[in-house]
Structures are given as structure tokens and as C-alpha cells.
Length: 208
Image (cartoon, rainbow, N blue to C red; front, side, top):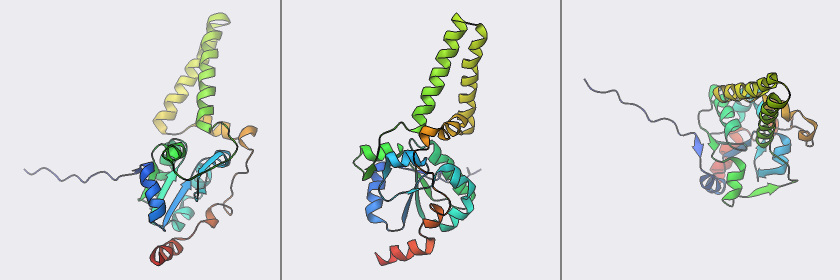
């Protein structure tokens, strides 16, 4: 009995060096940055569009209807970009790529980026808060009350759930903090409706 032919898994990641080449070679390329406005303001790829993950999640179908055939999703490390890719795939965009290493990885290989005021990215803030809570829980459990060790357990449980579901409730909560609101979050009108349409991208590609 012949063994079934298995199709190769779809490639969904893109190396920063490849993105550098794509930017100069493909007029129909759309680079979507799904981080917060504050993170985007600090450092972003020149020519990219800021559509934060919550906004993309709320208007996935509308966004998908505008995107062309060559889409690259970027964030800080790839976690939020992968969430965005899965949402767009559910809306019929099966050709979106996730940039390996995120925006910092692109900058590290000499990619053209725009730098603003330096501030901590959201994922670094999550690590700080989670790590501090664990340390406080363990120290408090030893010197104050054993019950405080439950804090460390709760954080560990939360991080495990976050990894299993590929979500981050702590990151979402931190994004709403005042220090992460120094830049105004883009709206549907300012972000999605400003994207070039699929037809416009195709015409631009043919003309180049």
C-alpha cells in the first residue's frame, strides 16, 4: 500500500535579510506593525503601517479585504505577529508572513528603521512585572506569611496559560497603563482606511 503524499507545511516566517530585499523589490508589499503606538513610535520599520493587534482583531475582515498578496507582520519578537497571522488566515489571507526577530531583528541586520524616544517595549515590561511578583511572593512567603507564596503560583499559572493559549492578559493590562499611552493609539480611520487597497497595490506593482 502506497504511503500518502504529505504536502509541505506552509512557510509563515520571514528572515529580516529577506525583508530588506523584499522592500526594494516588491511594490505590492505591505508591512503591518501590530505593536502599540508607543512601541511603534520608539522604533519602527520605515514605510510600515501601525495596526495594533487589538485593532486588527476588531476589524480583521475589513483589513483582510484591503490587503494584497504580499503581507509581512511585525512586532517585538513575533508572538503578537503570529496571533495576527492566525486571525488574518481565518479571514482568508493565507500568505501573510511573520518577521523573525521582530523589529529589533530587522534593525540589527541594518534594515531601514525610524527611531524615536527610547522606552521599554511591552514584552520587557511583562517580564519585569512577572519576575518581580514571583520574587515578592517567595520572599513574602518566607518572611511575612506562607500564603504570599500563592502569588508566585498565580503568576506561574498565568504564564503557563499565556503560553498555552498564545495570549497575554498581563500585556494587555500593561498596555492600558498611562506610561504606555504617551502616543495616541491609531483608530480604524487613521490606520485601516489609510492602507492602500488591494487593487492599488496590484496596479503599483504592474507599473514598476
